[in-house]
Image 1 (cartoon, rainbow, N blue to C red):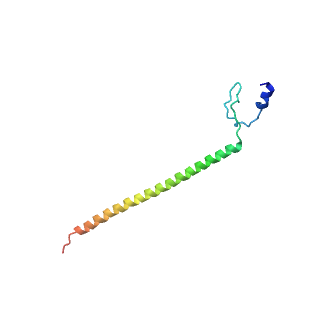
Image 2 (cartoon, rainbow, N blue to C red):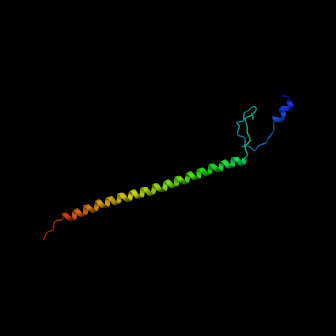
Image 3 (tube, helix red, strand yellow):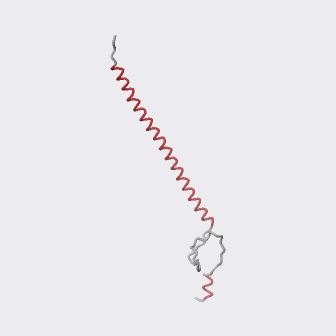
Length: 103
């Protein structure tokens, strides 16, 4: 291929980017941009929105799990209290039955 044909399909472009938008390690001598790709900002924003949505749904699920866990602990505590109350009432009934009645 001649140089002119190569330049038709493979050419270099100088692009000025804001600081922080280049994610290639900067070398002290000369940075090689041959593996660099340009990504549309809208694509990055779309991916960020998808990540935020998944994170929010996970937080919602964790909140629901926490609420159900709290309800379960309350029910278990109430169940334990009622069982102890049954034991107390049976013992009181037994005490009443064992009282000696005198004249």
